[in-house]
Length: 350
Image (cartoon, rainbow, N blue to C red):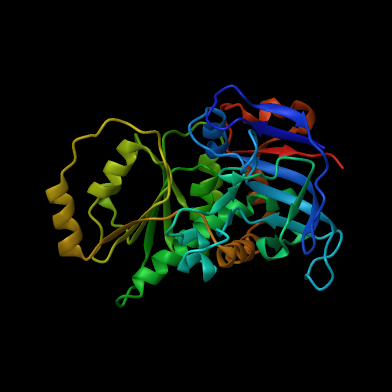
């Protein structure tokens, strides 16, 4: 089969190579890839910033945002040939910590998890892959190619779940949410906020391209950084999806209603330490009972919640998030950044 691979931590090592077709072991299913989504994590891996190949191998098969159809599955696995599926990215260590053993591998404490296409496990950017049925999620075929959005949607499903768990520490009746960043994760976070009945606002850097219309059509209010007067609004929830230093500082300086919850869900490039008003930040958190927390990855429960959210969404809107569909024959183009991109998807012919 053809597969997109890198040598982790070596920039310029990206290539399309031939690999033997994977053979499922007892209890595994075999799936034929329909598409993989491309995101900033993939590009950072390609740039050599991080990543780790499977033990005993020099190269890592990329792709953590998957969509595939089952070729064959074990009896009584709950899957059958033809099912549309998505693979779960993070897996627990074989000798798991307490969280991993309880199915909360997204909250791993020993760091020995694997992540398909990222850390110590091959990903899904090959024509075929094998998977444990327990680490595979069935998706509605009616979603079509938009089902490839399930993995990024699972990340924000987790963020919203944890926000709501924290909110239950008191009588909490959120009304307004701010999402910073209008990439796929930010727009999906906005969608899930609107589905919760909140007044959702999205902040991004400009009005060029499709993002403003996508935010509006999801039911949110779109602001550019130049236009925004966010101090005039008070947010019960903030989900920060950019990882950009200046945006994070701005979010943490915002005055929110008492009990405000801020979720940091984006990762940016490392920079030199910047000046920050820690005393003011501390005073705001303490006197307002505010919470700031980080969130990464997702477990099976979050994939299922994300699948339900996508099923409730307008399919046309979801398809508009996918702004470029690149066939495997032009695979290198999928990893390029282009103006107007929201989500790029590498597609595999059948």
